[in-house]
Image (cartoon, rainbow, N blue to C red; front, side, top):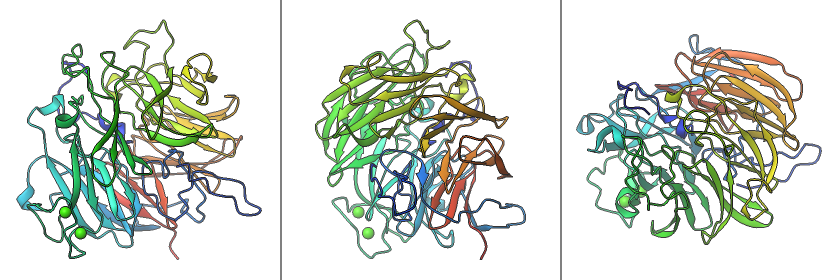
Length: 487
Ligand SMILES: [Ca+2]
Ligand SMILES: [Ca+2]
């Protein structure tokens, strides 16, 4: 952001907006990898490969938030909600701010993670975080918790507005047990969070998050991976922590640092708000991370050994005119990595680039690993969905692109006439996408463009709709909706 920007309505937080559990196709149906397989949607992207597709059937294709047609429940969130919901263990978890005050003892501007009952929308518990005293440089007012959490078993992982990675018990204190190693929580009521461990990235690895921390965790084996959001200070010239890592791996059971990497060094263009992905690529478990210099890097997941790196910007491009950062999440699909670049929404519209990268290559693979390059996309902060050989990805200018995933050939584009911060969900032969005007459009998946429906949610939809157990969960700025076809 530039110093000329003022006001608290800053909408920086795309970010959250913000597996390789390859599911075996059942006889007669086509393979749709990346389905979480349990009916839950336990992390950003559903699976560690972050490919937002699902095998679920029977999701609603029409609803009305005014008449409540096909609206199962609505839960009130804070005034700005950039976290995307995840669904696991019979609960829905989402990041927001503290303007829907649940506990007078925890008043004021805070980041908040809330848990709701999946079946009814009943508020269960929350964890709140005061804003950093350093203010907007590291923790922009009213932006709340912008990361999507990840749930594995009874443990929930997320990054707070203070740049702290948290591991909580999804059952809180409702299970009658204070789970450790952390057992000295000050608040231990039914609506409070039961902490297992935490890791302060500013304190422990010296990260200096630019405006906000937003990384959504991803897990492989015993490791949980997050990006640090380390970036420039408010001068937009100086990088206070050039030696802090861009990505870290923590032991998921203890919260201890296992490895870190700082290939970016002092070349951060702005901030680092992309979230890492995990998948088996060419037989190797990799973590893929898009970083603040506009490069994407692949690491051997268990060791942190850097395997490859790819520059998403043309060499002659100049920041911020036409050189971009990367805010969307890399998607891993059949040994390839799909990623688009863009800029902070505050920077407005501009040219973007979308790539298919052969991540089995090693070293600087900017040329050798470039399977295809699509330059008809505008700046994008969105993450691709790939299903049945087709790739769907929106851009910040409001165009949804449908391409052949193997060749990059474009089949169609669709203009939603509003900025898009969120990403597509492909489910049951349909593509769902929300926009800043608050509309969710549903298109037919496939090489022919066909708009099936469009519904307005009442305020901007920065999030991505997610499916769980036959319902669709999506939040606008201040409400969380469970949508399901009335029986
Ligand atoms: Ca507990
Ligand atoms: Ca505890």
